Image (cartoon, each protein chain N blue to C red):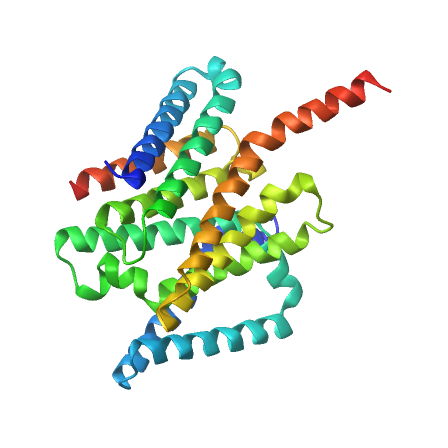
Length: 112
Length: 200
C-alpha cells in the first residue's frame, strides 16, 4: 500500500464516521447538540487526510483513484464551507455532508 | 415582495455565471486548437486572456467583485461546480463517453484551469480581506494562499516542465495551515481565554 492510498483510505474512513454521526443527528434531533461538533471534527480530519493523499500522490494527470480523491477533497471543501454559511448551519449542513459522502462513495463504487 | 438577494448571496445566479465563464473558455480553447496552436501556446494565450479579463473586471466592478470573491456562498458554489466537472469526467471515463469529457481531458482543459483560477483569486481576495495579519490567522492565510501556489506551480510545470517544487510548497502550506486552523489554534485560543478569565 502506498502512502497516498493509505492517507486516502484514512480520509475516507474519517468522513464515513462524520457521515454516520450526521445521520444519527438526523435520526434523533436530541443528539444534534452533542454529535454535530464531532461530525464536523471528523469531516475536518478527513479533509486534511484526503488533502495529504493528493499531496503525496505525485504529478498530474492523476490515476483514476487519485481523481476520485480529488473529487472527494472538493466535496468536503464544499461541505466545510456549507458549515460556514449561517443560513445552512445545522440540518442543511448535515444533509449536505451526507449527500457529499453518498456521491463520493458512489463514485468509488463506480470506479471499481 | 422581498427584494432579490444580491449577486454575491445568490447561488443559482453565481452557478450560471460560472457556467458562462467555463463555456467561454471551452469555446476559446476549441478555437485555439482549430487554429493549430500547441499545448504551450494555448496556455500562454490562456494566461494572457486571464490577465486581460482580470484587469477588465477589476477596473469595471471592483466592489461587487470583492463582495463576490469574499462570499462563503460563492465558495460553496465554486466547490459544487468543480465537483460537477470532476464527477462528469469520472462518469465519462467509466462509461466510455466522448474523449473531451473524460477526466484526463477535463483536468487538463483550459476551462477547468479557468475555474481553478477563479477559486485561487477568491482565496487570495479573502486573504487580503483578513488584514492585519497575526499569528492566530497563520493557518487561515496558509490555507487560502496554497491553492494559488499549487495552480501556479501546475501551470509553470506545463509550460516549462518544472514547477513541481511550487506545487509541493503549496500542498505543504495547505496541510500545515489546515492542521493549524483545525487542531492547534482552538486549544491555544481556549488557553488564552482561560488566562484572561483567571486575571493577572
